[in-house]
Amino acid sequence: MSETILEQKRLLRARIQAWRAALAPERLVEAGRAVAELGLAFLPSRSASAVVSGFSPLPGEFRLWPLLRRLDADNVPLALPVIEGKRQPLRFRTWRPGDATEAGQWGIAEPKADQPSVEPDILLVPLLAFDGAGFRLGYGGGYYDRTLRRLRGLKPIVAVGIACEEQRVERVPHFDYDERLDWVLTPSGPVRCVG
Image (cartoon, rainbow, N blue to C red; front, side, top):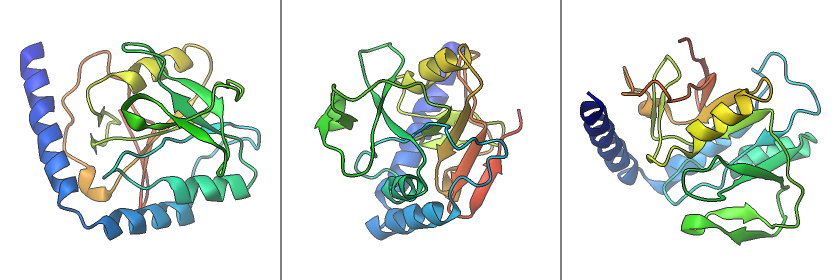
């Protein structure tokens, strides 16, 4: 059974990566601008002090920088994830647009080690595919599943996937330990995940 789920994930991952590779770069830029215009006002109980964790997009990923700049302009406390090791949950350090970063694993920009650690309240999560129940397909490292599990054991948090509408599929193959998203923010608007 688990072999079947792994194979289904592999095939879906390959399909979405091929779709994304065929996208014109301008499409991801436009999508990033559209999401920035929408912002996070759809989250019903967001306090002014809620820390939002973004992510540094890999080449070909959704451009998140416009949304992070907007949140910073609105005085929202921001953070970025730091990879501490394989099979470890992500950790977070404070960050603002313009802050110096250093290259972490896979060359992903991370806040410098002298920045304070924080526990975010809202996580913006990259993904390859998602479904209406909130299951997401990532790259297979399990970093966000472990991170969401750890943070949900500490306090209430909100996980918001960032994606284009075309990344929605009928069903993402998943295991019992895969963590769900609460929302997915697309250029057309937010999608509430109902599991």
